[in-house]
Image (cartoon, helix red, strand yellow):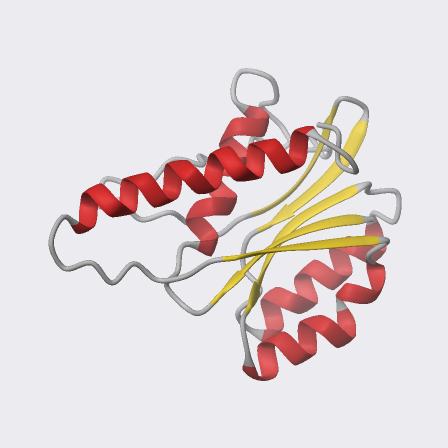
Length: 157
């Protein structure tokens, strides 16, 4: 399984980045997961918050697991179950905390499923003036970077 892992401290935009990737991958192409369930909305709610989700889709004949939350044991164990249940998944897009026990658990229990592992580290925006402008630039730039990564080897989406 080829992993793209969006990593960083709490509140750096990991869930947002993964929602934007999922929206880009599925928009106008896929409406249900492999079990026939409707996909969640990958757009922010009216307050601008993005929500965690976990899906398995097939895109361009490749099974893809997209699992946004790995910030606690139940969410990581849920991903592990999904990885075991779908050993034929080619691509996994998920998140990982930057330090502490969450990263240790992820590295010990989830990373061994990978045949290729690429991490995209995120940072916090600390700009006080023009925060929204900087935040929009940051999110758009990350999506462009992630699109480039996923369109090319080894993902080829």
